[in-house]
Length: 255
Length: 115
Image: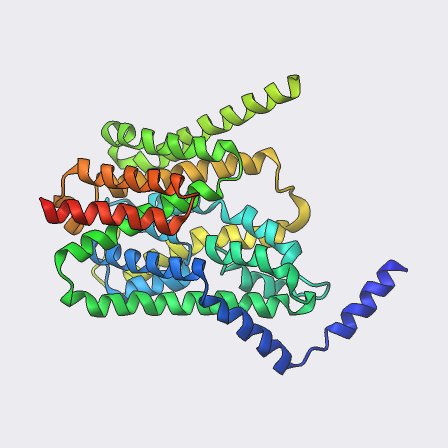
């Protein structure tokens, strides 16, 4: 019975016309005028400054923004490139920094999909998952009619990526007239944005331990093994934080 | 096989696709395929988040301790001090990202102008 009813309701509501879908797409798109989106844009201004200072060309940085999207992954890639890493080493570092996208997508799916959403749609929409779009979606999707959520999220994602690609291009074009101190200030935006937003989004206490471990271990590994400093810091810091998590949990269970 | 290996115009784009696009979207796509089969609070995911967080923290440290370009010529204590000060303001201000970032920027720019 229950299956029948959900089937019926999905076929009824699945008939939304293009105009309705477009309206919800635009509602999602209008989220570009929100505090998190504006913060993200300012950190893309900083990212563009970082890319310029690292010798990336405008078309390479815009391309990166569109195909990678997640800011930490792009910063890790640029870090790997400037340190002269090989392609496999760079790919491994980027992949390690992006594993977090998988649980984010897993958590988003039940919010995002309707009973008839196609997998290809979800694969396309999953590309927009990065911290900002994900936080917005998790906060707002439950207020959107279920069968229009994909349209709404597409609006958020497409416009966020498009506008930030434009922001990057504009910074490149304006950068010729920037005084040096502006580059220094722009460069600093990215680490500060990560430092603060990552601390806030850390779900378990272990996340904050992982952050502190990463900050403290990096200079150590940089001095000992400069070529693999990022990877080793991630692995060793992550293991430390996870051990803390296990000990804490066992202690709770023992009580 | 580094960024500089080939002089051709297309090489950096291939590098970005292989080391950037593939290395990120593979996780997003895996998330779609795994779907509801994995619990969000499972221990594997806690571990995965720990490693990813430590790695991004390492990148933060790299950017502050060993920056490239204009910031590279500034004293290290100014960069670390500005970041630590900004973070302290962020905590005091009720974890507002914008406030923390602005505080660090004010400290940094003031220091750069004063030196």
